[in-house]
Image (tube, rainbow, N blue to C red; front, side, top):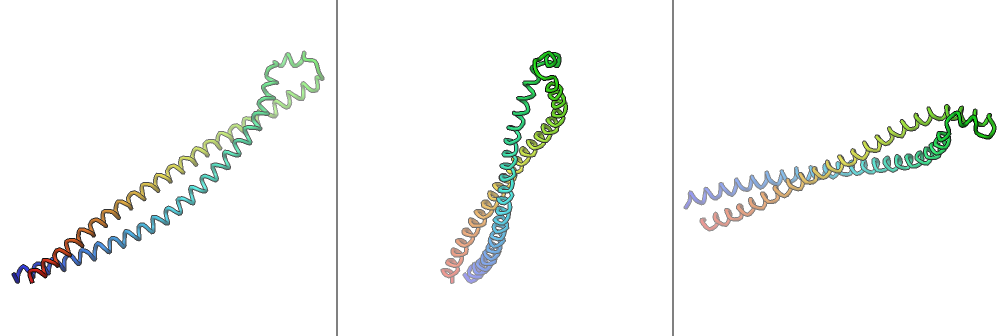
Length: 174
């Protein structure tokens, strides 16, 4: 029984050391949680900036859509009449010449704006993808930390229970 008491005492000391190690791991996990919370705050700030950027781009696109629709309607009206018909059309020939000059001047600008609009739409899509990626990273990180904390807590509880049982058995043998 002396040997059994000594073995139980050694087991108790070993369990105490393990509990200390587990507590240290829990402290490390708590530090990870704090780092994660900081990362969450940073990611949320990035998401807010991306949402603001998206809202600005959507607003700009809406404004440009209105401008384009007016120009396109004017071009459509002009396009209905072939150049020969414009010459035969009643009205001041100077107006017809001005319209043709205006059309030549407007088309390159419309093409430039259309390209700018295309780039803005691409930028908007990229911003949305960034927001989606940030949200996914945030969720993955939170799940990993939660899983790690649960594992450590279960492990700590089982070791505490084993320590209590070992101490009780040691006292009974003694």
